[in-house]
Length: 294
Image 1 (cartoon, rainbow, N blue to C red):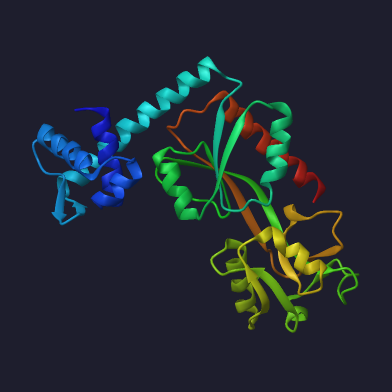
Image 2: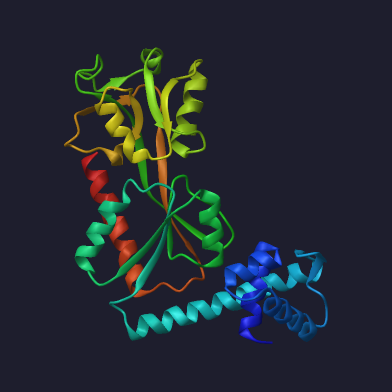
């Protein structure tokens, strides 16, 4: 059994389509088919049920997939460990985030300490992040809400109050807090349904007996402050996103505790490089600093 056979098998198993798998691997379909066939001959049983170019893992394939993923996972961790030992100051940290609002400040803080360390950041849904974490393909995930899963270490690093953002000059801009009832007739700007903050806010409004009127719904949380400043609508925004330079007043919500939890996630068995360990410390330091000023 060869390493290449395992790598090809994992790709075919995930895509379950020979043509798409060959395209992903940058090999010919005939070469890929022959490699999978030799693997099945080595094992002694078919791993897929075939219908034309489409394949579906059978009972043998599902069983073998778990072992193959574990074997390649360990080999990848060994490669990363050797690379770290040979070049500790020139590594790359693989990150996944569900919301990037705090990431620029964290990366800037880390870069000052470790200018030669590189980053690769992916903006993902919680399910996409969980998949990459379980495969060991990222060092850390920074997620809100926290994600639970087998072999996933979940550390809550910050409880982020969600505040009402209104532009300076708004009827509420001289207040420090507001009740939900006072917001009934306001126009809101926000992220789309499916984002944790939006779903949390909507559930609180539902419990109060009315539905907020959204005049803008997007998928870029960082843009909301610009809409608020322009007077398009008011918004629910996390306290960690506050910027003293903005012409915005932030109010706490009375009678309701609106908080989003931010978690740092990692695979329990993934090798942690020196750079990744330092990154985790910077994340903890950053949120401790934010906590002290909110």
